[in-house]
Image (cartoon, rainbow, N blue to C red; front, side):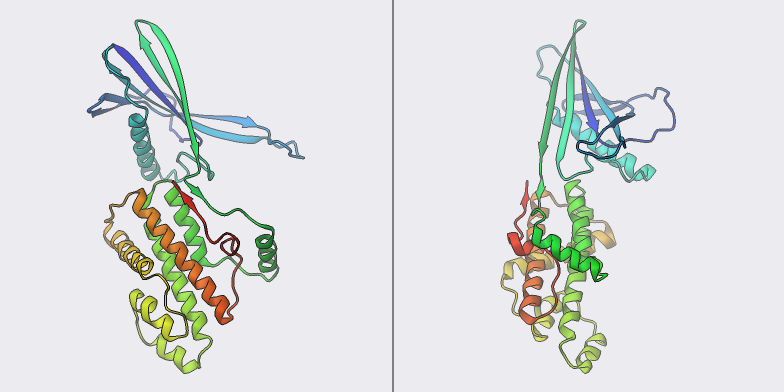
Length: 307
């Protein structure tokens, strides 16, 4: 028999009540019975390169180990199988204990480091593995955007709430928390559409604004009819509009009933449609003469890579 131990290094620390030994969690699968061991939290230190201070960066981490046995002639299960178990375990620890920081990354680069230890007849071999990538590759900060941000700060302006929710959606998408990403994207679209319509209403007689405030239009009506009636151009991409409307309906299903079954590809399509929507409102504001916002989209056409 071969005894296989998979180890995954997480860049966040699980807070555990004590250091005593716990029984492993036994998880059956078609690849064998996997044993999910108690997390091993730890801390270390590192000095930042090029710093002018003597400050030390504290680095927290957790080791997650999964064990499985298989016959000598059987292939070692791919590390993606126990990785799924670790993902699910961390998700449950996060919601059960409210340790909201737990996850596989705290930066834009999605990386994973680990090893596979194989024991056969007392002989131990170790094979390291690792991956790194940018599942979301946004436009970089440019000097023009940097200067525009400075003007906004000097003027005492806060970032638009719709844009903040959009960034929250990216963070959730990065974590593969697709339902939370759907909710955040839907909220971002609703806030941006309402803000855009408010900007358009400022160009009309106060009676128009009063009439609008007394009428409860739904999201679809606002998007497809009201914005145009107030002076916006027709939305240039009908297919993208329908994707936005589908996203908004799905957001309601998640928020009110917790129902949502989507995958990476579906969320990616929603994201690109949302980016097109935000780009359209920015272009319309510029065309009409409404003050815009600092954005890298003006320089890089909102190019995102999502893998």
